Each structure stands twice: as C-alpha cells, then as structure tokens.
Image (cartoon, rainbow, N blue to C red; front, top):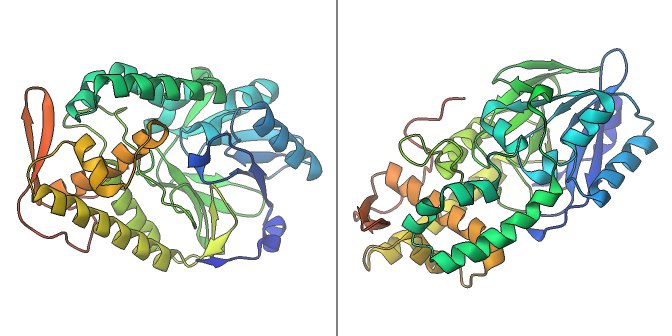
Length: 349
C-alpha cells in the first residue's frame, strides 16, 4: 500500500470528507465523497453515520468547500456509517438515493443486522451459538438503530452493474462488488485510473465479508467470502493509480494489497482445517480456532470470518456440512487449502 497525494482530487471535482464513527469496528472515520456535477451542485458518494457528530462533520466539510446544492446521494453499501444521513439529507434537498437492489432493504430497515438476527434466530442456533449469547448479541446490535433513519422507499433508485454516472469532470461506471455486503458497489473511473473503493478494498484493515441472510439461508444464501474473493479478483485486474477507500486516505498498490489479503484468508482456512482434523465442529466452536479470545461486542464479526472461510473450504470440496438435531457441523475431507481462494463460479451482479 502506497499513500497517494490527494491534492489532484479537487482538480477533478472530488472532495473527501472524513466523518466520525461511534464504534471501533469501522476502522476509523468514514469518508463521504462530494463529487461536483455537470451544471452545478454535487453528488454525495456515501453520507456519514447518522449521529449528531457525523452529520455535523459532513455539513461542516461541505460548507468549507462551498458546496450547497445536493443533487444525488449514491450509497456504496447498506451499513450505517455510510448511509446514516441519507433520509435526512434527502428530505432537506429532494435528492434521490441510489443503491444496489441487494442492499436496498438495509436502507429501508427491513434487513438491518438486528432485524436479521431476530428473524433468523434459528439459523444462529444452527451455527451452535448458545441462546443466551444470542440475546446478548441482540442487545448490542439494537444500539445501531440510532445511527441511521430508515429511508423512504419512494426516495430510492436502483444502481446496476455497468451503469454510467456522469459528473462535472468524468464519467464513472458502477462496479458491483459483493462481499462486504451483497449490494456493495464501487465507482470506477477508467480514464483517471481511479476507483471509489469504499469498504471493498481498505489499506489498513480487512473488509470483513459479513454474515448476511438478507437473500435467504438455504440455496440462495449469500456466501460473503466466496463472493468477496471473486469481486476482489476483478478489482485486482484493474489498472488503478488511486483508490479512494471508505475509511482512511487515498492509496495505490491494490494488487499487492489484495494478494496479501488472499494469503491471509488461506492462513485462516489452514487453522480451521487443522482444527477440523480433530473432529467435526460448529461455526461457534471454530471461533476459538481462529481467534485467541472472544467477546460479545465482536462475536458477530468473528462468526462472519469463520463462516466465510468455512464456506470457501466447502466450495473447494475440502469440508463437508453435516446437520443433525438442528445444529450444523463441518468435518474435514483431508485436502489442504488451495492458494487460489476464488470460487469456481463468480457471483452474478
């Protein structure tokens, strides 16, 4: 990862505005990007966490840059630190909110994490999570409801893979990059070799493809890390001189960064495989094979990491899923992890 001098951004009408996030798991302040539009005004690519502090920082950043007329809000993905102020700003300005269809119901509130946990309680019991632990997790997740107002459906417009968005100084193409969420999108500007990478590629932390049941829990279940690896391989192949992340400053060197991330996943898959050689285990039981200690505040992230890596191993034919008595366990099939973590079939955008 190599830092990039951001001074060139103002020349192409891009303004990065860091905004505070009230939880450490985000990896630091969340970036909102104000992009100047043709004919005046601007588009927001992400719009900060919906706290008083987040909204104040966003307003101050826009004021300092003399940006007053909001035309559009483009949401990279349905996490509160990226869309939290969408409803408030849309009410004030009349701007439409653009989001990929797979994350639309996160913005309207139906598929927020706390709602998924409440509606899919039995699935988490299948993962081996004790009932009292689930209640503690739910209590923690309910706090996030204060960080984003649900967005009215009539304010929402859908983004599609390959869709062109025209700005004052360039045209960007929508790149659907599922993984961190099912509907995450980046904006690719080929002529500038620029990628608005939001949380798909981060310089200092793993993007953590999250356990997500918004598409179902059976055959249609979203396999987050399987999808992420396919999306990341697409991004790795792009010619890029600058990535604008969802957290942190601009950087380049994405190919080496992603290759290191793939190897990081392979190492975790090796630890999981080694544990499974001792006998079948649930996802909850496998957490201790990957993490030295656990706590309720980070357990959802840990379950996501473990399940994601197990699903990659399952796709590769290295583990088998067993279900008995309402609990899923996985057993090793005795094959070492491959170094290519891409799935056999990439997800359809």
